[in-house]
Amino acid sequence: RATYWKLLLGVLPRQQDYWEEEIEKQRKTYEEWIQELILDPHAKYAKYIEDNPDGETVEDVTLADHPLSTSRESTWGQHFKDLEMMEEIDKDVKRTFPHLHFFNKDGAVGCTKHYEALNRILFIYAKLNPGIKYVQGMNEVLGPIY
Image (cartoon, rainbow, N blue to C red):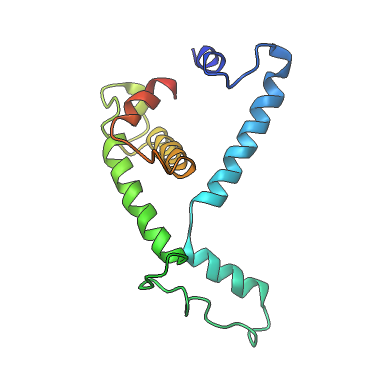
């Protein structure tokens, strides 16, 4: 069934010989999106310290970009907006087909690796499509495709 969805949605080319290469390319792109779009302000500071191991040149990179900053370029500001969107997505995803064993076989209702994947997919979609963002009910569309 998953293969048919990929073909119908144009994710896979019609020629089966190219499927493996195309899937590998798309997975790499998805991993890049995860790294690029899921922000962690703490990681930014840790990377700065790692890049300056002598300690003398390290300054507080959060001085201009701290959690209370109102700047539009603030990593923290974007992080907090992303958290709000993630919470909204998570509320809906936890209600995605709770009666199906596939989604709940690994643990408590709404807390499985499948729900985490749905959260991540919807969040990345929202970030890549800022005009649409996340709309309630997208989880119901993604559930059967996933």
